[in-house]
Length: 299
Ligand code: NAP
Image (cartoon, rainbow, N blue to C red; front, side, top):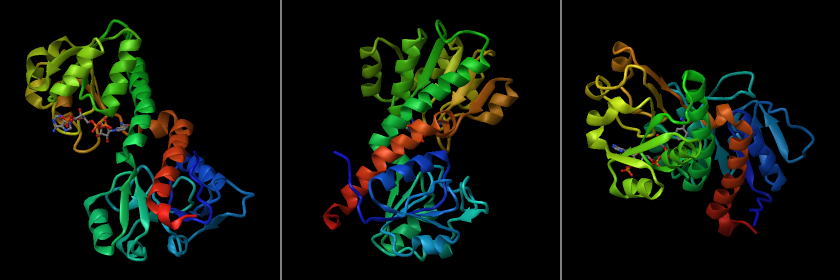
């Protein structure tokens, strides 16, 4: 069943193509949406376009900041705003308690402010159902990069996937589907058992050093330093390392460069390779989460 959001006031603070699809879905569910910037959507009396983020926040039960979060200076990505948009402390203090505040991932400062002001913070990237669906464009994007960067086919390649969480699982399954020889490395016995059940090879993460040389492509999904210098020094000189993990990431890139290995960080793939699908995923999941959180207040 679709979550009706009639009369729910929602502020959108920046975003990119994905948030445009989200705005369309929110409007279709009859929410009242205030957007800072000009997303190029017109003709709906429930959509209010504003220049001032404080105005957008006023009276909103829900605030949605971008999937991309903020940079170190608090800047929000806003491809449809002609001027920079910041999630400053001053702006945050304007948010009333009990407001639902979505942001891709929140830094410690945002977490502290939300707690002290009684704001309900939801890190969009951590919503399980959204992360599972987002793993699909992420995995496709990672394979696309591998295809573009390597002079060999993925089919028949020795591919290593580090971690078998949501992204690792989607990726391992897709790689297997196109004929790669897939090995999964994990510290978790359950994940290794799952990989075996899928017909994949497995190694304990702690044994990586002994086996790393055989892999032509390494996809990392573990957000902790697993590909450290000692291990990288044993890798195949022709390996391609694609690190998908968020900070602190899994690769010592300085060491990789020093060793002459091809290693790259590939963040934000859903928004880059499939913004329409990624936007539709936001549009499908966020209204359900709003409804679940405001449920009793909604008719
Ligand atoms: P997830 O479901 O939480 O899976 C994380 C995996 O990393 C699990 O296998 C987990 O194993 C393992 N892990 C975590 N910390 C570890 C540690 N210290 N040592 C060893 N293993 C560890 O996360 P996900 O949704 O798959 O996402 C994986 C990463 O990709 C995250 O950093 C996420 O932010 C990022 N991401 C990137 C993109 C992109 O476009 N590049 C898109 C989506 C997500 P345990 O269960 O043992 O902890």
